Length: 223
Ligand code: C5P
Image 1 (cartoon, rainbow, N blue to C red):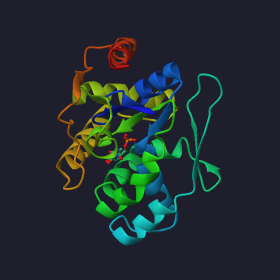
Image 2 (cartoon, rainbow, N blue to C red):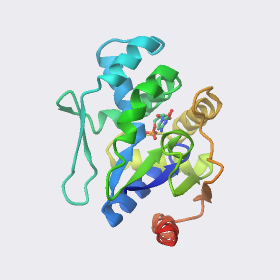
Image 3 (cartoon, protein in one colour):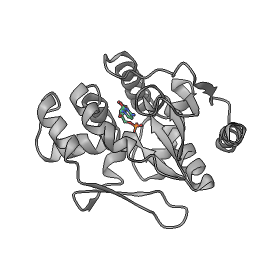
């Protein structure tokens, strides 16, 4: 029986990096659910589907031809869309914003639901997203809700983008983060919110190793 750790929270709270480290440490699978919404947005753009055409976007989501290939040692997973590497293309702020538009549509979320649940395979999965604990893996034995102030998240995002060679300005990133938070928290379907049984973790003042140690300790306590 596989086990599940869910990590939900707003963008830039460190979920991506932390989920990767925890999955690698435990030898578990990793579900980057945000990547699926980003890939849906990118595929829609490439196939010239409008971001308000719910039925067609759901088709795109259902038929998404994607692969997550292991990266070289200590390198992130390589993301492929229709046979082409899009690891960088899906990480832009524009793609993140488009992802949050398509993610607000019920038919798109429904189309991606089973694909996400299929990641739950032995020995376990670390699931990173917005609704992992509230919708996708409601029975997960360990649910974490990670957050940090918008300013701290913007600072982290700027550093992350610059490290990837992408030009980034603090003010622009901060206002994008705030508008994306608003859209994710206020949408009608699967809004971003902690599950009732989630552990709340504010990482504003925490380092990545501190957060990882905390979560691994919680995981051991549940084992
Ligand atoms: O986590 P990431 O920034 O890659 O997610 C991009 C967007 O996809 C989020 O802003 C959110 O709107 C959407 N998303 C979602 N549900 C998830 C994961 C991501 O709605 N489980």
